[in-house]
Picture 1 (cartoon, rainbow over the protein chains, first blue to last red):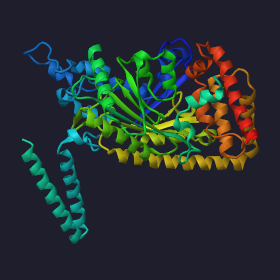
Picture 2: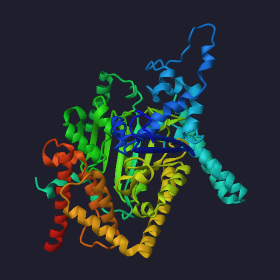
Picture 3: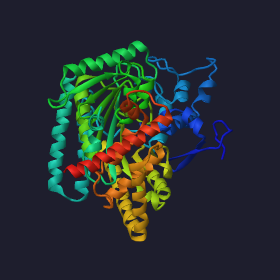
Picture 4: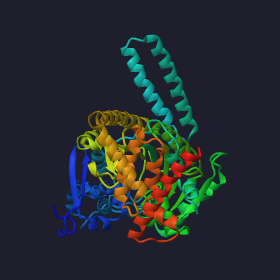
Length: 182
Length: 360
């Protein structure tokens, strides 16, 4: 097999990447692999394959033809007002310029994020204490409401009543919080 | 410098300490990616802004003690020698990207090197905790503690829908990458890795060898980590990884048992040949050293070799990398000189073991 980078020397390193069952292969000779940098030699971080393949993945999004057809502007490109990154730039390098980019590119982002995270598009993990504000409370209430449903379906009414009281007190806390927050 | 002193300075706690299932799992790592809301990401930020990020973090963290026990050291990439950086990379304390391509990059190191905080890597902040053996939950706990402490000092970029905002969309959400380094000679020798790797991939986890993927891993050491960071909680991600790792451990153990049953003498021969190479060679390349170290470690785990401590694999895999060899030599070395140095260091290290044995 010939190296796919220089098309000269025989390939010595074979990379296979599986993402959700999709297989991508790379075949490189030792020299090209070395030129690709230390990423091949170090197994740190996200590695070579993901980030390089990412740009290709993002490119599939047919987000652009629509805006290009606009008759008012010759080329309407979405641009982040905080860091001036444009959507095509983001697609090209596969990285955001700042936190605000998530808001700026919101419309086109959801399918990309879903594809990267097995269909997930909502954070379900840790919430920072200070910045998360009342998000903690709301999450907790959501969780307890789910528990309450379970308890009712299992006919554990005594525990369900306790749960209901707990939810009420948390909801009160939430309205107090919102009242005090303005 | 004597080898003993060099090693004691070079070895991080995860390499020398014992952890659960450490016959197969060498280390567990948790990495959290965080960004400050008031600055643009390292993807686009200019020199001045990068400096501000670094200064902000240094300042805030200097004022606030993390814990009474642990002293933190703030290392600026611009202030340290290339060789020192390389050594930090080889110890997995910082990434190659931080060492070579960051602007005003820095890292905070804990004294025992159990955790490090990278500043201005791909994200403003990357917290990393490294534990020996299979201790993902413990590492997560430690990382969370650092994360909470940091959150009190700086403003994180956080979004209700997308969670912690990261410069790469593959990290958004929890910003967490959990990984374990596993020594799997049994599965490689019985040629089961080619079957297992795709199965692990289908579960949303990634398998990497030190040099790439599949059966070509250096020293039979594989890194397994989560692929998805959004939509699952940190503890769920860790639990999922834990359960897959436990299954791999069981498979590796049964592969080792099968090897002993079917080809005991061949296995013993392989172990002792490799031991002979390590104890006697005068020139040795990385790849051969890694293979032999893996065999010897397997020999220790299986009870063939008794007088050598089992930390030898992770220790020497780290110490025989180019950066460390050059630091030990006290200057730059050409590749063929490194091979000579590597052989000498390994011989000396093995002698140290047998002398300890005689002395004790």
